Image (cartoon, rainbow, N blue to C red; front, top):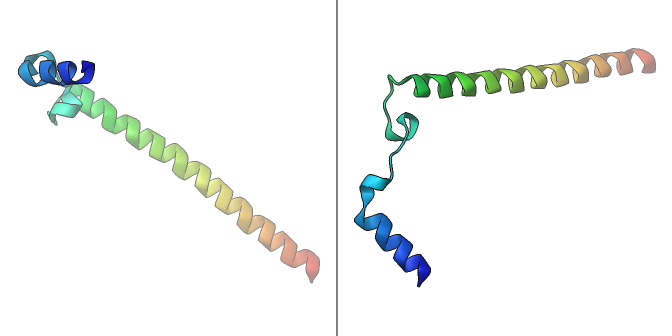
Length: 69
């Protein structure tokens, strides 16, 4: 019953919900630009860490081959 009342209030009064610039889709808003830069920064960190892990695997593989020969 309570969920029905909440749903009805949301449907009747859509002016209560104000989406932000990111959700609403304004590509020129500063908030959208900031979100995009944040995503790119996190992707850069993840890429850097994955490159370091891959480099470590290659180095350990080369050292292992040298030891076994």
